[in-house]
Structures are given as structure tokens and as C-alpha cells.
Length: 226
Image 1 (cartoon, rainbow, N blue to C red):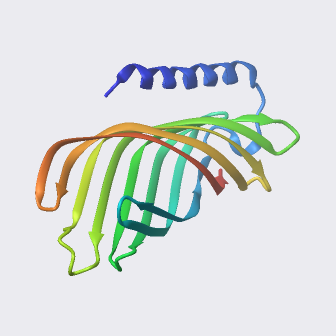
Image 2: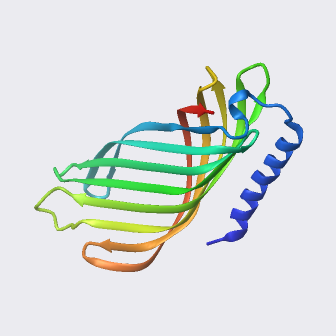
């Protein structure tokens, strides 16, 4: 795992938070010390594409599938505008591919994350709006299953699993509709290196390494309590 790029990204966030703390002296009532914040964010998506080729025989396939990401971030305000707590995120995608010869296969990718989370709010006083950088560090777990559904095929199930250190860097905006409820949008980058095993048609491979570099836009609702 390359440590320097990770430290570089984190250092940018720390510097950004320092500047925000130095110049953001006021706050919105729900963002004060001792309060609690928690809620859900997520997104959904649908893939639908086809491919074709010929050399010398024809090859055609059509792939479609549904995927989603869900995130729950919960914490307490340890000082005005700064919350610290836990972050859980789950991503899953199911794809089905049908080929010209009538065969098909199904692929499922799952990626989970759990770790420590911190967010610093920069409020725009009198507007009900705030922007925020956030960071979370923790454990990531990846699993992929490719399962041919045609019993006549010689292909066997392929499974991949890996886990290890992962992190999220985010930048977002929140709009308070009351002192207890806010809607938010977050742009998140997820990185890290996961290590594990690959079972490809009965052959076991060790020392598998997966480099994460994922970008998500999450929409959600957060609850603020005091």
C-alpha cells in the first residue's frame, strides 16, 4: 500500500479543518457542544449496456443490473461544529449478462466499511446552510461472486474476498429545515488496500490485493438532538 498519497490526502483535510476552525467563529444551534447527530444517506443506480464483436464468429451480450450504496454516520459534538463518531457504509451491485448462445452469468459485488468518523461544519449564519469536510478511517471488506447460471457450461463459480484498511474523504453541504432535521449531499472518495484470496474455477489464488478508488455522491437526512 502506498502510504504517502493517503497521508497527502488526509493532510489536505486536516489543513482545511484548521482553516475552518480559525475563521468560523459562529455556529448554528444544533451544531453546539454536547449535541448528537445521526442519519442515513445513499444512492441507487441501474446499469444497462450491450456489446458485440466478430472475429471470425459473432459475439453479442447484454448486461443489466441494480446497485445501491447506503451510509450511516453517527456522532457527538465534542466542540462547536465538530462531531466525532462512527461511520458504516455498504455498497452492493448485482449484474446479469446474457450471451448470444443462450448462456448467462450473474455477478454480485459487495463492499462494506466500518470505522471512526469526524466531520467539521462551516455554517452560514442566518441561512440554515452549512458545508463540511469529513473523514473516516477503518475496516473494509470486499466480496465478489461470479456465478454462471447455465448448467451446460464448463465455467464454475468465481469468488473473490479481501479485507483491510480503508478510508473515506468527503465534502458536502447540509440544509436545516428545523433545529432537528437537515437534508444533505456528500461527495465521497473511498480509498484503501484490501488483501485476500481468489477462487477461480476451483483454483485458489493467494496474495490478492485490491486497491480501492471509489467516488460516490450520497443524498440523505440527518437528525440532530440535544
